[in-house]
Length: 139
Image (tube, rainbow, N blue to C red):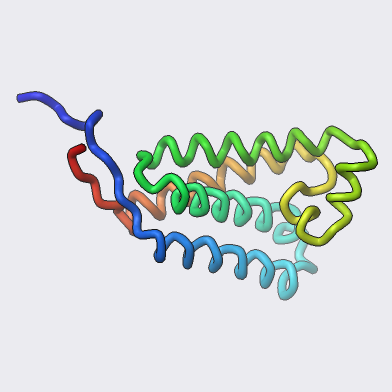
């Protein structure tokens, strides 16, 4: 019997993934506001939540991609954003000084953020695979 796993297409509920993206964003804001005095939360939790949000956001946009592709894209995007923090010119620092620009682009490169992104994307993958279980149909 032939294995058709390569011809399977994933279908994700966009309403669910928009809710998950917004919920993780809200949890991130609340974690800073309510628990920001704790060093662990301030240094690591926000970055992991950011990567989870990126994972769910990519799953929303690329709803037919398999989980591993969404994870790879989310991790690649997160790493590129972190690496962009090594670049400092007046124009991009002006964007970073705006509230939304600072949230999206960050300010300074930190090696531990890369680990947090890996953990966050891994958590997003586990939530999708173990809890959400997107519908897989043959193409």
